[in-house]
Length: 547
Ligand code: G4P
Image (tube, rainbow, N blue to C red):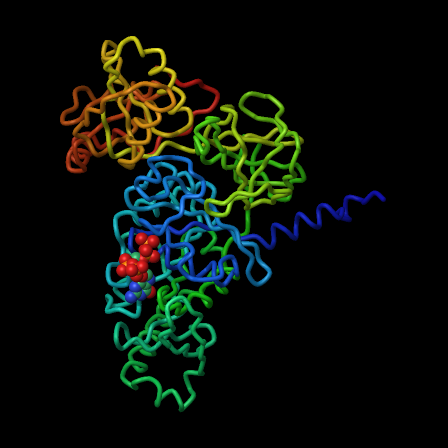
């Protein structure tokens, strides 16, 4: 049976249903805000784990099942981001993990290129913190919707209005509280659900258990026996103030990344997590059209397409295998399908696609827009590569983000130069680290540039164990990098500049390195016309300079 253009085929219907069901997000937060705890509670609701504690992945508790790196085991940390998929209330949710602490790396930023939504998690006592701000900036580049969860309300925190004001003033992100807290710390009594005007009472649940959720209308007289009248009055007054400010929960504004729905809760005591998840599913953006060289690609485009946002190497050191993580953007992906690799123009059969759940892997039969699959990578994939079937598409690449740690990479053994060169080129291609070069061509050693210290250690470790070259790092005293938007002509036009070092990136573009933000600001003041960017524009069609 053939279907007419007005009648979608069964395949199109199932694709449309799968897309409508999917929600994908990443959590952006500063270490210790409670990301692990919140993730665990979300998975508990999704039935993906049976007991709390299963996600806890710190120190000795972590069971390394992938066995991928001695270093990872030694440090007891997870080096790379993981993806967790779970079903809840008829939706399929993909949670892209963004590592924090010392394992913060460019992967963390790149993961956000694969996310359709972000949950910004704040500690109520601390408000905005440095890592959250950085990750927020990356979300802002793509204008993805941001949902804010203000955590640890069971502990003394800052004034809720002050926390919102900070987000609005500092990030330029308008807030729309979906619920409003009644008291905090020892006197935290619950929240008022702004849309239903019900009070959701806080009851301390046993750790990891689902607390019973008791709701009462704000006009119910029984409330007076459960909540101190002064606390309730204050919360209601503040809510009036917010209503007076007039903004509506405007969904297009949320989806444009201009307005953040805000939730107050406590992940540890499991208060407010389920209402948050329900509202998130209602308000979050479904997998949407994505920019490509051929214009926006709709997820319902019948042909499969996706892009590589992350590579993980050496999951099994004996085989030097690599897994490429692909975000599905359109069409249905099926095991064993043959796709085109846009950059090389080659056809590849994807015979062992994997579905990932944290560290566990299983072969996946199919996947839909919003999902992430892991592909065995025989060295052919690079960050940003597009895979497609049907008509050709190529997605915009993933930019390089401003590194903050710099070091000369020295190879003390000249006879190992060939391996050194091979290793450096391959690791750069893979996106393990950025490589910069001195403008003085006689200084041939590369400068490693990274956003996290661990990236440096991983590069050295891998050079030694995979390429047989022991290297030495000589740290450089810079913390800020900026690309010159107008390239060399713009830089030459301003003449001599002070208190910064000019280097070249792998595409020969000028990059300025500063010791601190103060020096950067000074240059900005001296040369207001010199346009600088913290993110390197994506280059397409040009091969980078190899070492
Ligand atoms: P992270 O992944 O963002 O780094 O944070 P994580 O979930 O590990 O939480 C950091 C600490 O904050 C943990 O305490 C955790 O129990 C606590 N926490 C998380 N959510 C809440 C909350 O809603 N209320 C309160 N009071 N605490 C919360 P820890 O002492 O470091 O670890 P643990 O011994 O509790 O596991």
